[in-house]
Length: 411
Ligand code: ZN
Image (cartoon, rainbow, N blue to C red; front, side, top):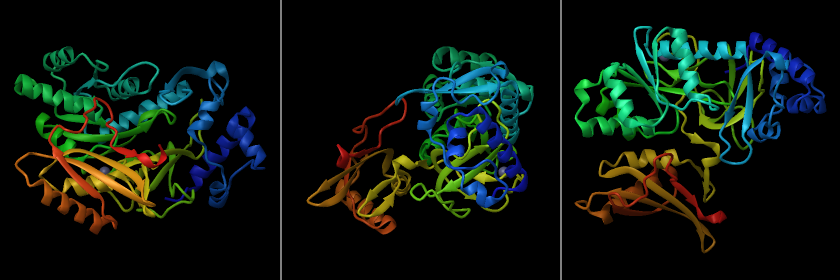
């Protein structure tokens, strides 16, 4: 998806502003002797920006507008190191709300819907983003925030919420609670808008069948507005994203070069109209691909595939690049196995080896299952792993993200 004339002009404008603000990126441009872009080649020479750069600008070093124009800040979680603070102008907040309204519209949600919002409110961009979009659409927001499942379900029944916004893990938890309490017939949900983390097809099917709802994947990250910069439509053929606000590239994470449309790589985002903290060629480390061609829905907005993982997840084993998703897909073809697995990589006797732990019920022949799984990995990826089938429930469960890959080579 090559950058077009209008997008180039917008980036050129941002470059002038970044240099004037003299923030980290403005300085980088000056060092590189770049003060404008007018061609695709110029654009591709622009340096990348990284989360580490944003951390270095803490607290307000990213601000590219006058301080009196900033109406709000948000912050990404500081699980590793310094948090990142993103300043927003009134226009940024409005633009974000407009993108989010579009997301709801693409999911077929209207002003007659009642939208129960379970992501957190506060410094982080989730809850308030869902809320802004909902109000712009004119639907009724039920701003619950996370947790308190009893109250969550009570409101869901009493207010007859028709849409649930949640992470996939919380949606699954709610689905299981509804089932356990036998209150399915009191629930009026029709759709779920689910934050796009990598989640397996098995989990997806469970949420959608237990709640009896259609699921939509929504994409976004705090550094770039927040959730709401893209969503899947009813044809479920990837996520449309808003190229009037953002320019997306897919690069090879190792070489930094653009890959052709259709090929997998890392998403790199340039904000086109952001005022508070514009970002140029920001490396998200999210893995996806541009989906070529037109969506059956007829929308002109381009599409990316659902996020398949993070570029930092890539494992290099015996010279082959492997992503956890590939292993997960192979395991998904064995109905005998549960959705849980663990991959351990080690270096023994001068060779890399991969061990895969999977779960199955005790009524299966573990030994033949081990051989079948190993053979399937060999034929699809090119090397033979050591497979261990263990009893159901043996692998650790987690409320948040389970750690599925353990690389013992670097410990
Ligand atoms: Zn579509």
